[in-house]
Image (tube, rainbow, N blue to C red; front, side, top):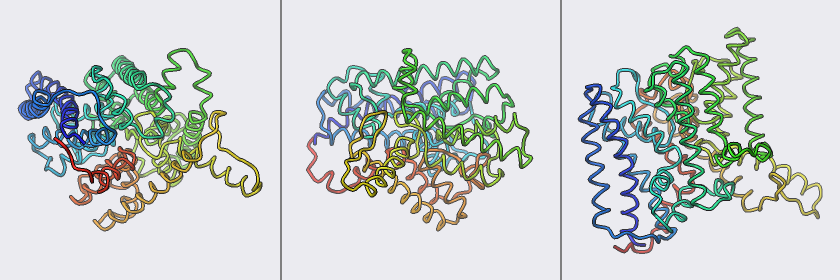
Length: 484
C-alpha cells in the first residue's frame, strides 16, 4: 500500500472543510461576532494541512481497494478532528469532549447535541455547525468527487469504498454518472427547500441552515425548540415533505425529475417505506387525538413531522415526544431502527434490508413447506442473490447486537434504561434525539464524558455502516507494510 496516495486524497477532503470554515468566518466578520477569529484560525490550519500534501505528493489516478478504504475512513476521522477546531477555539460549553461529540454528530448527520442554549451561539458558528451536516450528508469522499471531477480512474475505487454494498446494488450506474446524479439531486433539493422556507417566512440564514440539515437528514436547528420555534404549519409541512424525499434513493428521485414516474412507484422499497410512514403517522395521530393531546388537524401535522423526522434519521422536532403516549413512543423506536432507503442520506438499518428480512422469512417458510422447490427472494420482479439476502440479515442481526451492547455500556455510565436504549438507537441510527432527558426537546449535555465518547463511536459505526468500521480496525487488514 502506498501511503502517499492516501495522504493526497485525504488532503482534498480536508480542503473541502476549510472552504466552509472560511464561509462561516465571513458570516462572523459581516456580523462582527466573537467567532470570527476561531473560525478564521480553523480555516487557516485546515488549509495548511490540506495544501502541503498537494504540493509535495505527486498526483496519481490509480489506487487500490485497500487504499480506497483507508482514504475514506481517514477522511471521516480527520474531518471529525478538523470540525472540533472552531468549537474548541471558541470555548464556552465546548470542552474537547463536547466539541468532538458535536463535530461527529454534525458530520455523521446524527443531530445529537450537547448544547442546552443554541440561540446564544454566533451565526458564523451556527453556519459551520449546519455545514458539517451538508458536507457529511452524501459522504465526504462523494462530496470531493462531485466538486473535483479531475480525479480520473481513482473515482471508481473511491466511489465503491464510500458507499455500502446495499447502496451499490441499488445504484446500477457507472461511478461518474452516479456521482453526478447524487450531487445534482442533493443540491437541487437543498436549493428548492431554501427558496420555499424563505418564501414562507424564514430568514435567509435560517432557510439555508435548515435546508442543509433537512436534505442531509441531520437535524441541527438554529433554535432551542427546533422547528416548534417558528410556529408555522407551512414551514412544518415543507420540512416534512423534504425530509420524506431525502429518505428516498436519490437515483429514484432522479427518475421522477426525468419524467419516469412509473419506475419510481414500481420500486418495492419505496412502496414499503412510504406505506410504513403513512401507517405510523395515522396511528400516532390517532393516539394523540384520543389521549387529548391535540385535535385531528394538529395531531396529524405533529405526527407527520416527528415520525418522518425519526424515520429519516433527521431529528427535527415540533413537539416534546418524550411526553407522548406509549404507542407513538414505540413507533418512534421502530422507525429509529428501520430508517429510510439505501442511496439516500439517512441512517438506521435501511428499509431495503428490513424488506429483504421480511421476504427472506417468507422464503424460509416456503422452503420448509416445499423442501424440493427452488425458491428465490424477489425485489421488483428480479431475483435477489442469496449472498445479498444473507448479508442484509447478518447486518440487521449485528446491528441489534450493537444496540444491546451500547445500551449496556451507557447504563454503566449512569443513564436510565430508557435513555441508554433510546440514545444508543438514536446515535447508531444517526437519528439525534432519544427519549427522556435526551429527547426531542432535551440534549446530551448531562451525559458523562465517557457516555459521550461511547455515543460518538456509535455515530461513527452507524455512518460507516458497521462493516467498513470493523474492517478498518481489523489487524489483518493492514498486515502488509505501508510504502512511502
